[in-house]
Image (cartoon, rainbow, N blue to C red):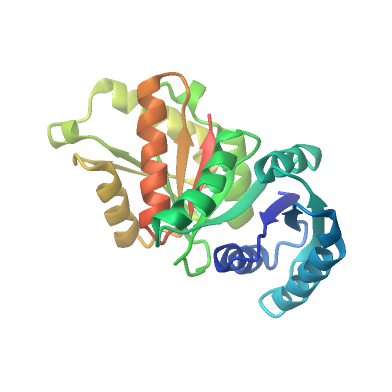
Length: 261
């Protein structure tokens, strides 16, 4: 990975995400972290640039990362962030989210989820209560359907090769109480080949509550972040995946990496 954008509005949620990103990227010397702020009033240009520089200096106490700052005017935060991500060919955006109150969900949360929906690049969502741990275990939640067409292997591999974690690929379906079908076995083999150099481990959980199952698995296996793939081919999958991303991001304390197929 080369360019990673961390949007900052100076709320505690965004500052926590910036601290998390700094710890996450420390030691990855080829990565450039961009602290990005969008302001409405052009009179605030110098003030916001100074605040970003101060934050940059504060973050040097957290970790050692190649870092730059960018404060720019704009009336639409997501629009400016999307343009920047495209212009800099960002590999990742790291954003905070909090679920402490309905108001914070509607303001901070909606912007984060809007950025996920732009499809520009993967978004690592940092819950407000997330505490940084070295990335040793990553969970990829998959429906094991149409693997080659629906799994964006390159952006996933780019992230995983940066941090070299153990990869746990998980499917949750109540029918697994009986046995795995031939279709599931075939898709499992496709996934194994897709990530064979990462030596994935596979799990099939026979449960009905997907969010609860993911959270329990993440706790048991000490997962450091969860990969959720957003699919667009049907109204059902749009609702299913996005609703679980929201629940995991708002209710959990484990970062969620959202990637579009």
